[in-house]
Image 1: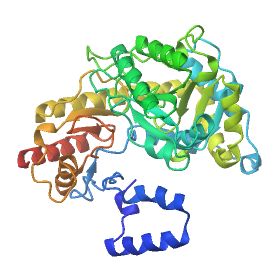
Image 2: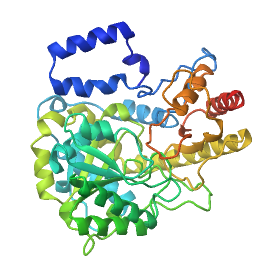
Image 3: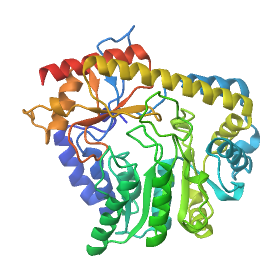
Amino acid sequence: MDNSDYSIPSDASVLLKIEMATRTSARAQATAEFLSAPWRFATRQTYNKERNQDGVISFALAENRLVVQDIRDFVNRNVTFEVNDFNYGTTSRFPKALAAHLTEYLHPSLPIEPEHIRSTSSCTALHDMLAWAVADPGDAILLNRPIYGRFELDFTNREQVKILYADTDAETCLQVSAIQMYEEALADAAASGIKVRAILIVNPNNPLGQCYHRDTLVALMKLCQRHQIHLISDEVYACSVFDSDEPEATPFTSMLSIDPRGLIDADLLHIEYGFAKDFAAGGMKLGALVSRSQPVLRALDSLMRFHTPSGPVLNMACALLEDRAWCRAYIDAMRRRTKEAHAHAAKALRAAGIPFLAGSNAGFFVWIDLSAHLPEDLDGEANAEFAFAKKALAAGVFVQPKEEHDNKAGWFRLVYTQDPDIITEGIRRLKSVMKSA
């Protein structure tokens, strides 16, 4: 989201707080606070090499602009709407179509049946629903570091479920050695009287662009079984994997591909999927959960009147999934273009002298190290990363600071799935900021 969508003058902000205090609930006031958090929203890209060369290049939004036209063109050619698409109710088509797609690409050890799937109006909505389903206010979900930064909003804003972090780092957080950090975090939470209800991972990882080791996934299953807590695997980038030719890269393993029997109770294991990443369709607002847990699915069903996807969206999604020949060709093209974009970005970063984490082979981003260039002069900002982002934005390039909750200062996510000329120009601008820092 663009900062300008929510920014208001400071005097008006003070007045608004006073009005909210008298006109809205305490919980509304609390959740609205995040709208004023510094650097909380990604600045949108305004750069255009023909029409606006002075515009901002944004490396922040995790969108695959290399293939969104393919989705648009397919929908325009192949989707027609029926009367039933605009009526109340749901369709049985989508769970069947998604089960077939996930079976082909995630290689499940046990069959995925339509009754194991619940579709929702985005993965963000699904997180809110899962918070409701598995935790009470004041309970916690445990994550590692670094990780996608919006889970704190998704689980906390309405359901008041805490987010806790295992003290992991980018180099080891996907390895078996990280399990000890989870154990320590669970012990610390128990000592503080906080009930951890679930561990949530993102695989492939956002922001690292790396995949979990299979042994780590097995160890996480065993860990959650020992503590009798839920294990949620967010696999929205499951098909956005490619051969990066990096020797450190780990192939993708879906949690669904590991036979859970003897490792974790079926009631504790849940896998997320959505259309925002693999299908470059964040605007469709469509997510899904795969689970064999009848209690959790029942809890989600109780919330469906608030989060059911629209009929037209489900129609489009079914069309995309049911044309298996087109879908396979699309996934192949998406992977090829993403691989080429990764190689281009990696080459440009090396030429600019910008270090980045090796071993990425998934997602739309690399994890870059700008720690050596954080400014000493904070220029009115709360920390050096905010100050760097401010300098970069003044130079026409946006990287979002402190979004991924890393415990090391100076690392940023760079999204490279866009026009290579824009990537080249954006990295050139970043280098100019480094020189001036």
